[in-house]
Image 1 (cartoon, helix red, strand yellow):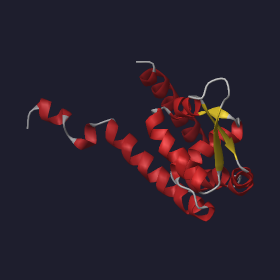
Image 2 (image 1 turned 90 degrees about the horizontal axis):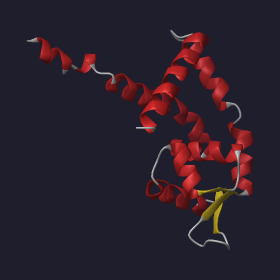
Image 3 (image 1 turned 45 degrees about the horizontal axis):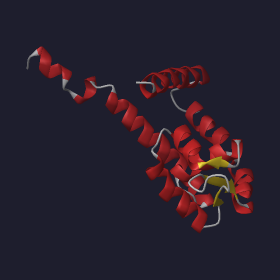
Image 4 (image 1 turned 180 degrees about the vertical axis):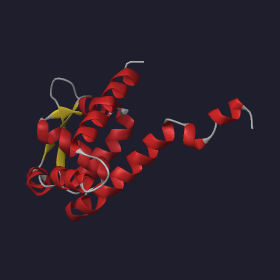
Length: 149
């Protein structure tokens, strides 16, 4: 095997550990989200709206680093189960405002324990709080760099 073949080994890729870690971390969230009857993408939307309710579909998509045509079906499903409401503005009917319903606001109370419980799970493993903070900072730098390209 020559040196260029080494470049194509899975173990030498940056993308694979990021992909695998993302999948596995998302899997860790699943039991908590199952109790709330929501998916991980729905949880991300809720995190955004719990921080600031009444955003447009475009604003939500931008925060999630997704296209609106990816976010819209997700929001429609959330509306169908009563988590949020979508409405157009009188100023511009193309702008859709997304607001939490009473059920969506209640889910916030039920989800408050999730971040702390996940951190505690990680702390019982091979990483410590400094590792987690460093990893988050590095990932944030990567996200900023790649999203500005």
